[in-house]
Length: 75
Image (cartoon, rainbow, N blue to C red; front, side, top):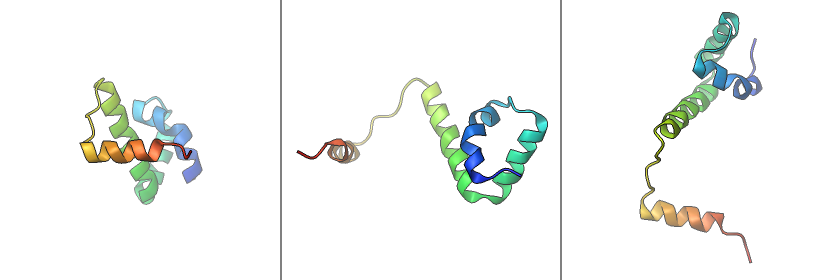
């Protein structure tokens, strides 16, 4: 049985459909009962779709300001 810590290593192959059937079945079973891993996989799939489009939407000005402030290193 797969554990949550196994999911990141197997996620890309799962999304690409390149796993053997028994591994895919194990992933599907784990995702059926684990909401945290489902959320992880949903976010990964969304990120892959956005990156495949070649363009990410620009953040709104307030979000951009908060991101820049969060990225600044202390003096």
